[in-house]
Image 1 (tube, rainbow, N blue to C red):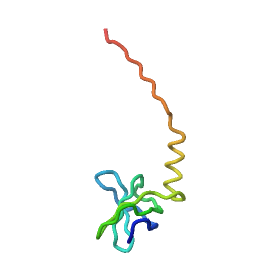
Image 2: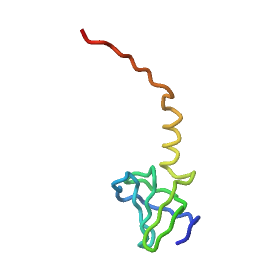
Image 3: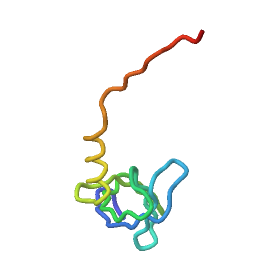
Image 4: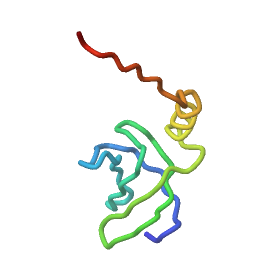
Length: 85
């Protein structure tokens, strides 16, 4: 595996840091913003001997949902402070 390579992965587990974990030919890949059950296309950003890190590529099913969710999210939050009697 090499940096820049694009892999199709099925995310089967989650890391303690919240990254999705998938495997390609026994090579483990940690993918930010992926969740268990996703089938994603990920570009390798960092490669070690037995594992690597990747980022979602446009066209992944979860990438489309994440982008749509971000667009629909409110951009401001209103907080009201009240004093207690």
